[in-house]
Length: 227
Image 1 (cartoon, rainbow, N blue to C red):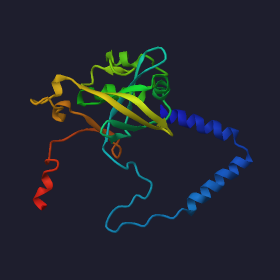
Image 2 (cartoon, rainbow, N blue to C red; image 1 turned 90 degrees about the horizontal axis):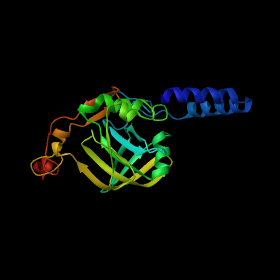
Image 3 (cartoon, rainbow, N blue to C red; image 1 turned 90 degrees about the vertical axis):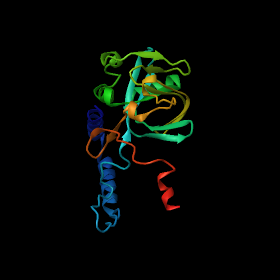
Image 4 (cartoon, rainbow, N blue to C red; image 1 turned 180 degrees about the vertical axis):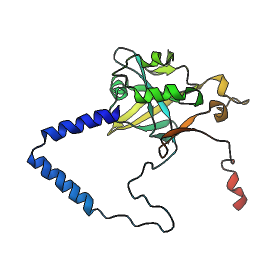
């Protein structure tokens, strides 16, 4: 869908361009050609700046918001990470979600898992502008968050309830005011167990979703053998 919108926008721009615009495009292309090609690293395949991934795999975070009609909306985002102990950062282009964020100043973040691959992918390819009831169409249900003005998607067992701290230049920063987890994904000590959650990640190189694997070492422990 994004590609369709992008192509339409490009055609409109080209149709409106004058000869001055054509000259500007020519200058841009000439500047690109003048950009120094990076040197190859010996013994490896070198991609330069033309690559399908920078940091991968990436978490499949599901952002849920209310729209102006108080309909729940959810989208998948891959460019996300933890900014601080209680803050999350997500890179977002223009979506219905961004309109909702301007309205409510709140959102929830959940994590796609092996059980919800098809539904989560659906939320990533269908816009709420075109299908306002897409959450219901996927067979999902919601519970209003008691802490922020946003919906919790019941089928995702781990959810962060967030307030918008800032949203500038496509960079969303949210403060996590609460994290809730279904009992089904907790270990005997009450901690979130990723082997029970079974989150998926986005592999940008292969354009697919992958399951997380087994634990291969103890954090702040495996490296002690070199001390």
